[in-house]
Length: 224
Length: 81
Image 1: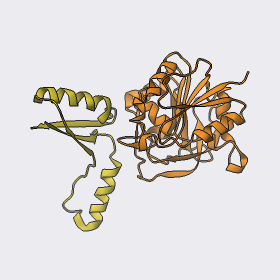
Image 2 (image 1 turned 90 degrees about the vertical axis):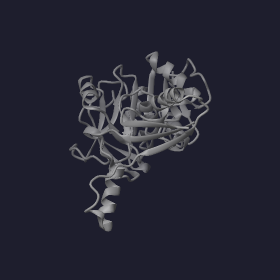
Image 3 (image 1 turned 45 degrees about the vertical axis):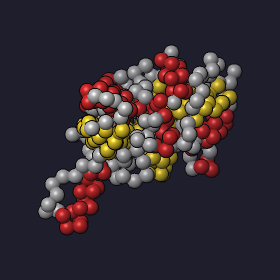
Image 4 (image 1 turned 180 degrees about the vertical axis):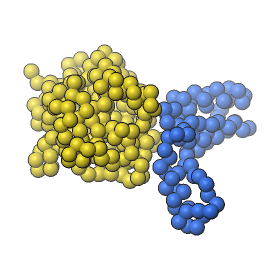
């Protein structure tokens, strides 16, 4: 049976249709869930918080979205052990909601960075990257101004011990290449329970060769 | 009652905006006079509270839950009549 993916939409979200397209291409059923909805359907297999500029990025990226009615439902959904994926602004919303550890800062060079970037798979022993291999290098677009991931030393240690670092920015040979100043070049992480995933790059924008890369398919397929 | 909240990145967390402004001031000829620059955010609240203590308690809660991200930011609160 095909999986059902719920895609959360806040005012200012702008990647919901790309995300819908990508998961439908993989054979999933999708539904867009409005920020004022208060429940996630019991038939939903995955909740995705897509990219964009929820609430205009006012105060801090993701800070206001955290208080949307739908986020209570997403939190309950995640707490029950089911899968949540945050892409770009979705990742920012997840850290602001404390569903993932750490915080986001402005990129070190203060620029909005929009380009294809290579990523290295650090840990594939989780559902999201289960179709990939450790140290595999993929090419996925990034597009953000606040993707400079920060976590203190104790938190970083914990991420490492639990294999929670999913992806790091690198060059085509897998050597560290850090576009935004993230601690340890981190591009994506998951929670300790490995059911909440967040990454700044956009796998949903890399699902067609005409878009320059199909590497995103291998990532998203992990959930199927 | 008025509350002025100042929010800055914690010491030890690199302040890229402060650094960029510092560089800008350096190139404008202020290199001799400027030792460090930090860029933060100021939020001014008009409050309905009647006592200073109550105001401070409320604003602290606001800072902890929304106004500041205490993972990376420190805040200070000033309450005035």
